[in-house]
Length: 325
Image (cartoon, rainbow, N blue to C red; front, side, top):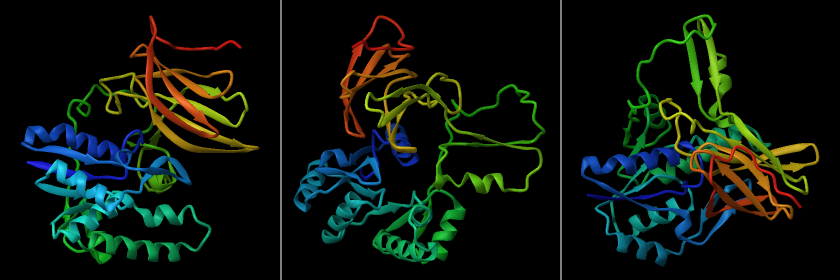
């Protein structure tokens, strides 16, 4: 069985949607299925103004039709509500092709937390938009029973629970570690971002201790002009046995405007990135990947950074780097 998944979220983005879909593709063959993706990089695209790492595909209807015809899928799943998701949804409706969708991102709260307008306005409009998008699907998939119940209460139809699996190679009992904290210990592991609502976790009235685990920078570099900084993020790439393991680390791109610092991008690079350095002219950024013994080459254009996809090997593990003038 061949399943076509249309998604506006894809590599090099570092987020839960991309990770979920990538893992599904890895596991699908064992279930007798293969996954083919329609992603923004296959079409003409532009960066999202407030989040440049996200590329918005602007495909022509003919291009969508040609791609789907070439893949010849047995089933179609629309994973996101962006321009590409809308284009494939439109194709399915026009060709009377049944399709499913999934609900990944709480856009109402996400948008309300970022726009200087009353939250009830943005939430009302955004929930209405999401209901309309998913209304054409044969089923809308939700990750938990509580989310499925909430979507149903908000007027979504035919919501199905599509739970996440557990990677037992990463998550399994281990000898207990004394953290010197009152027990039980409640652990929140993930990206520290507004939409993750970490404050709600910390506000819970729980016994023992509450611990928040984010990610830590391993290296930091400043552009020659001082308008961009880059932090190398491990993402657990240094420990294959850890539950938080990722094969690759990433770079967080920070735009500097006076005293204001804004993270604009997350770019996946190699395993255990440590060394980060700009070329003297500021046009390129080099990231040293300790485990893979190479450097990723990234292009710098103003405050926007893009991975060229090129690397060069070095005779050892790059833990630091400097470039002379």
